[in-house]
Amino acid sequence: MSQKVGRPKASADVKKDIRFSVRLDIKTEQALQEYCKKNNITKGEAIRQGINLLLGK
Image 1: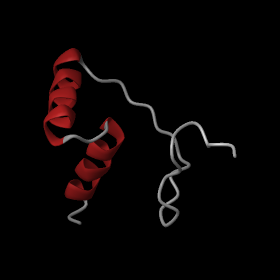
Image 2 (image 1 turned 135 degrees about the horizontal axis):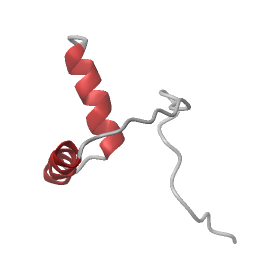
Image 3 (image 1 turned 120 degrees about the vertical axis):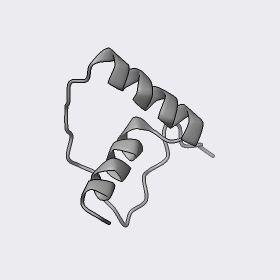
């Protein structure tokens, strides 16, 4: 029997196939890292949450 190796697939209900790049100053990057560590989320998830906050969702 072979076992699958690697990252598990993301949830099939939301496909995340668009990549986005942004430049940050060091203080913003450190604040983002601290937020992510404290809330146990990825940078991508933190950014998605921030966008939803801006859009009022």
